[in-house]
Image (cartoon, rainbow, N blue to C red):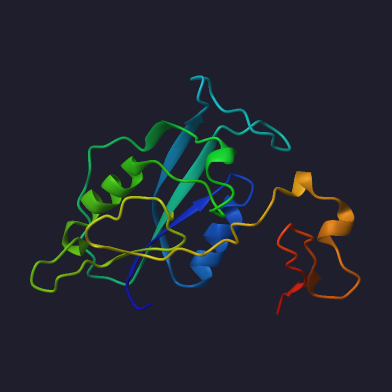
Length: 183
């Protein structure tokens, strides 16, 4: 990429590593947004962490190149929203759904990257888009398919998940599918 903005979700434990990696790719830090997570019963989500519990995810924003028009916002740098229970998305998705306000913020920040009537397309790309999410105008979304027969690891035994062959995963599912090689 010669010029553009990159938005990366991260957790506080690997935030410094992400920043170092992006600097090695000549990307400069611009800003961050915090998603303060609440559980469905309206209390802060308390996730374990080595030192202090975590109730947030961080969206880091990086810029590469020049000539990118960024609209300054008066919006907050914190979004307070509910986290969907894993049971609602874990069977079809690799990552949890993010709050819709994040997309609004990106579209406001980059007004000229949105849907262009003459080109009949936009210039936003979302990797690992959610399968059931409403498609936003101006966005190209990529969804990584997840085997719908996947079961939670806690429901599997060690024998179900590990093979003696290097690079192999064995899953004894009801469909009798077995041994998907990892390259």
